Structures are given as structure tokens and as C-alpha cells.
Amino acid sequence: MTVYDVIVIGGGPGGLSTAMYTTRLGFNTAIINRGGGRAAMMRNTHNVIGVLESVSGNEYLSTSIEQLQDYGVTYLKEFVTSITPLSTPDSISFQVQTESETHTASRVVLATGFKDVPPKPPLPRTGRGLHYCLHCDAHMFKDKSTYVMGHGPSAAHVAMTLLNFTDEVDLLLRGENPTWDDNLDQQLRSHPIDIIKEDISSIENNSDGWLQALVFEDGIRREYHGGFAMYGSEYNNKLAMDLNCELDEKGQIKVNKDGLTTTPGVYAVGDITPGHKQIPVAIGEGANAGIAIYLELRKFPKKF
Image (spheres, rainbow, N blue to C red):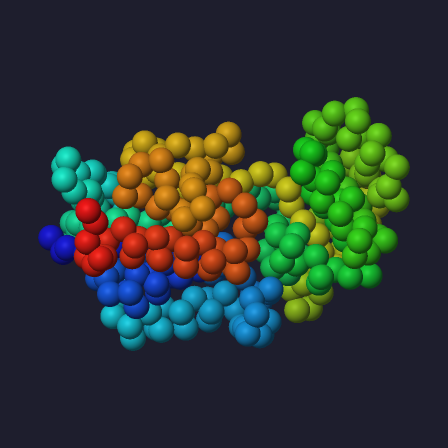
């Protein structure tokens, strides 16, 4: 059994930022990461000041992990199976079990993120015509023909928002009936957006694998540079539920301004918490949590 001051579960930007602060502030910190995640899927890193767009998500994460290891962070490529509170009236601690090892920590940080629900096939290649983050990627579609897939309110809102970047926006229902209300329907239809009921029958790509066109079941072919799928999110919140952390209606972990959950000693940062799902936001949340943990665990000045 290895004893740490802090264990961060998840290796995205929020968790890495937390580990940076707790380690540099003097606490023995481990990151346990199963791999993958939304940031790792990025072909290019957007909206991170000082990081060029030519840097892929994997390159960005790899550099960050090397930086943390140089500071002394323990990085474990493992899957956490359970977390058990070991708290007493006088102290807070947790047992963190992976598939092969057992660890303990005074504080646990959940940075487990979420995954976007993909559309049904056929679908374009992710990052080459199929995208999920409007704030990350809308700039790529400036003055280009763009689609939005989905039949819920979020799809309608994203389609209307994209008109700030291009005047060629189609909303693809893919054979489904819309689930937005009459007011939103009226608002949507006041915008210059084509709403296409038919499902997609086939996809055409350019020689580099980037989307060129979609062919619909009625035989109509439409060219697109790419677009966005809006089918909701699945939050990786099982560990949070096991720890009795309070969740919101979407399944996100409720936290205070420092990232502290409703369970003492458990913090959460990044995409698993409410707010914008952006790397700079996650980095800031990680910094706040790291400083808060330091203020909790430091020995001096003594409290009276």
C-alpha cells in the first residue's frame, strides 16, 4: 500500500493542473489515469494561450505529464475500481483501489470527465468533419458550409449560434422528430437554416480523409466542410456516486468555488463539473483546487 497526500483520478488538463499545484506546494501527489479522454482526442489544441494549434491533444498531455514527473508527481496508468473512505472523527483519508494496487490519500480529486454521445452511423471521422465543441471549433467553419446533427433543443441553439460564423447552416434531424417546444421551433424557423428530415445514406470524404459531402436517403447530396453532433453527454460519475457526492440533474458533480464536493476531502475539477468544457477553464479549476487542498493540509500556521 502506497501512501500519498493527494491522489488525482483522471489525466486531463484539470487533474494535471491540480497535481501541479499540490506537488509544487509540498504534497506527495499521484495521478491515476486510465488513458483516453476528450483532450486526448483533439487533432489540434485550440484556445490555449501559448500552445500552438499544430500541437495535438496527445502531444499537449504528454508534455504536461513529463513536466509533472520532473516535479516528482507519480503517474500511474491504471483504472480505479473503488474508493473507500477511511475517515475518523480526527482525520480524513481514503483507500483508492486500482486493478492491481491499493493506495491511500488524505485528499482525492475526481477529474474523470465525460464523453460525448456520438450519432448513429454513417458518420464522418471525428476531428475531420465531425466535431462536438462549438466554442473550440466554430472558428474552423467560418464562411464554410456547416451542419448540426441532432433533434433536441441543444442542436437548435447550436445551429442558430453558428450563423455568427457562416451563413450556410443545415440542421440534420436524421429521420427523428424534433423534441424542442413550439417557442424554440418558432425562433429556429426565423433563422436562415435548412432543416433536413431525411437520414444520411452515405458519406464522401476528400483524399485526406476530411469530410466532403453527405448523401441523404432521398438522393440529395450536400457538400459540407464539417459540423457538430449534439446528442448529449455521459458523465463518468460512478466514483462520485460511490462517495455520496451530490450531482446535478445532468450528472455533473456539484462543487464550490474551490472544487470541493459535498463529501469532505473529495474535490472535482474539469469536465465532470458544471461550466464550460474548455481546457483553460479546467486548468483554472485545477489551480483553485490545488491551492485549496494546500490550505487544508498545511501544518502552519496552527489553528486555535
